[in-house]
Image (cartoon, rainbow, N blue to C red; front, top):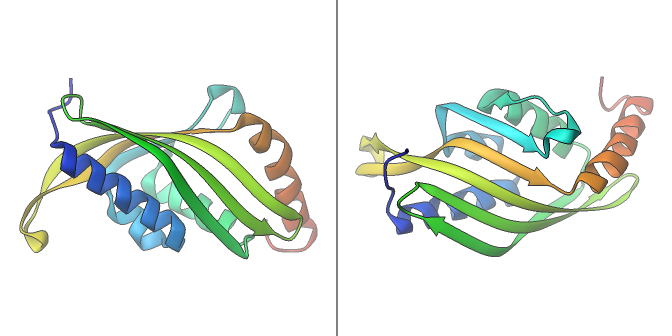
Length: 156
């Protein structure tokens, strides 16, 4: 079982995650992760491979290059200090060349505390990121968006 993480640390990590997505900042998306962080896009029925933090940042960067606007709105945050986990229920909206995008998420973040001398002590970092998405949107909209991108030379 993971070590306990203070609730305020878990909430700060959740805020950092959402801020990075809203800024579409790939450096910030990497900054809140441990070097060994694994990212899973679920449910498993989508057949998405598990990714390292670097692989996920590359994937997200390619996807965001197809959006002219993207924002995430948080509905609820649940912090489990004893288990070192925080769960975020959120929705996203974005504008793409094929129309408006919208998705719903349950983000389960397993957080560990690590020493960060630059920030004056221990900070929370995501060591495992489970991203549950709306499977209908993922099976319908994203393939159409990626097909458009390939047809228009925006993606290999």
